[in-house]
Amino acid sequence: MTYSIIARDPDTGALGIACQSHFFGVGRLVGWLEPGVGVIATQAFVNVGFGPRGLDLLRQGGSASQVLSTLVDTDDQPAYRQLAVIDGAGRVANYTGDLCVPAAGALSGDQVSVQGNMLTSTAVYESMIGAYVDASGTTFAARLLAALRAGEDAGGDARGSQSAVLKIVSGNRAGSPWEETLLDIRVDDHPDPVTEITRLASLSGAFDQIGSVLFTPRLMIGAYEDVDGEALTEALDALQGARAVLGDDNQEAAFWKAVLLLRAGRQEEAAGLFSEVFGRANHWRSYLRQVAEAGFVDTATAASLAQR
Image (cartoon, rainbow, N blue to C red; front, side):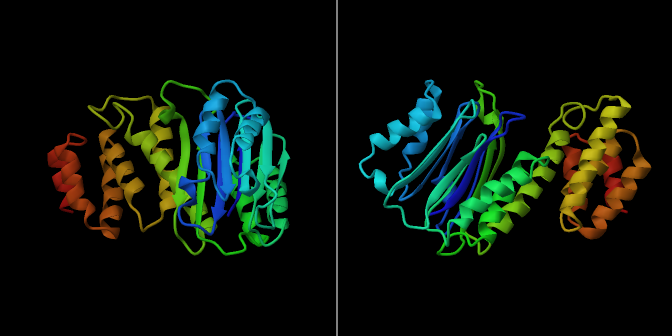
């Protein structure tokens, strides 16, 4: 009921999945990932249990092919299943049951597997692996999205489009795996989910840049301490990069850049940027006062800026 790509980034060890389906909320069903352990796509007449059970077997040291064989051999309806596995070392295995609705099939390459069923033609998954390889030199997320776009452009799901998922975790086994999730985006119901998830991936990157500044102690959280010029420049550049992505309709990055300028003693620059923010969205005036009450900036200065 979907087409998907799973892969391990050979440069970083990160593990990822991207998929699309004419089914509500495909992201809660198909893709299962654990940092440094592996990634699993379970689809067609989906056995969701393949995901958590497969990760458990990978965690215990099973290879991709061993885990796939165990899951398929112990299933009560294997002919209706489609499954792909990549382990933490990048080994690949995939399986398409004989009774999966055509067009159905899978291809594998170096640390990558593409698979699909209920497709308009085999060109859907055949085009995906080429697009992924051809996008080398871009980010891992961009390569996964290139594959998803190629599959959609080749005809996609025979029933149409509805939902998509893009998720990436790091290659690091850690005691706090939630800190190793690099990207996690779902589109549960949309007429063009591939385009929408591509848009959201760009927004996610922008908010990652904002977060890299916003959550840094002494730079933004808590009492400001002088940082070296290079660190401050990097933080301001990150916020400016996010601002360029968000555009005029979303002032989040611009506001926090102005706050950081104010915290760094660059009041004239901050005042000019706050003026731009307030001109585009007046409600940020009152929010500046709230931020001042929380100790981010001087309350008297914030009140003066908000009244301009």
